[in-house]
Image 1 (cartoon, rainbow, N blue to C red):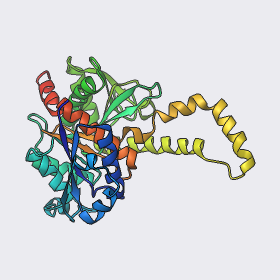
Image 2 (image 1 turned 180 degrees about the horizontal axis):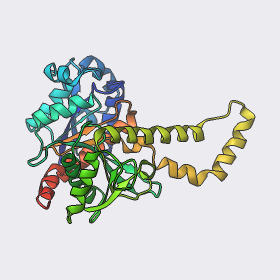
Image 3 (image 1 turned 30 degrees about the horizontal axis):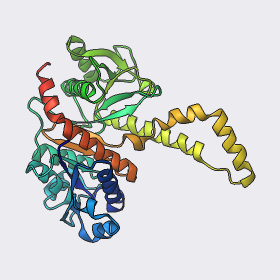
Image 4 (image 1 turned 90 degrees about the horizontal axis):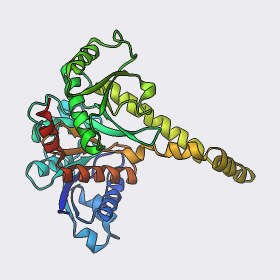
Length: 339
């Protein structure tokens, strides 16, 4: 196993270093051949490393910077004023060959824009897309894209997303001829926006893709499709709705009664009556699937949720490790030649 270096924007996200630094240490513990370049404010980073072992610190380099791209900044402003920010410097480290991938929980639009400028899309790809794995009720996984990188899309964009998603599923989930579904408001051919229907026509004509038709939102977790394709607007709403519903239901199971004498009764009921359902729900815990990849770029870039906790951000780092070691951009580029 060769050594691998990732560049982390530790200032991104709702909390910043208080989440990203413990997550970084957790990822280092899980991946003994991993090294990290941490881009952020020394004054916030150093106190969080004071109890860290020398063995882990030897695999960490801190690149001090105080400037951050705010989540509330518009894309144009963020790009014009990105010089010296933790996000841009992390991406520049990848561009310069100092790291094999980047992880950030910062502004999604800025990350997408800067990645396209600094790392460049793969040849033949018009728009990179955010892709992630989502769990199914049966315990398997599906691939879904776009999850918010491209709010407005045309038929050709969706067609390219389907190609990249299919290649992603082949290598990430070890699938052969993965089933592709287009997210729509109905399964009938006349339903949905014109660009979605036009994309369906393109997919139906491709013998290299296993297109199965439209899929509605109520079947996203049922494993009907291995690859679910959508524009970024609809995909982002669908994903966050699923995640919010899963977290809310799990919180109901974990909620403790206010009265002490009810705790034992409540625990017995949950354990004996709902154990199977609860275990299946835990499989769709969003924290275990944090980390959407900007697929279609020349390098690995993973976007974490801004609200991610320590375990969730560590999972995003681990996902970047997997993709960098598998050389995912090269796999996508090679796969594009088949279509």
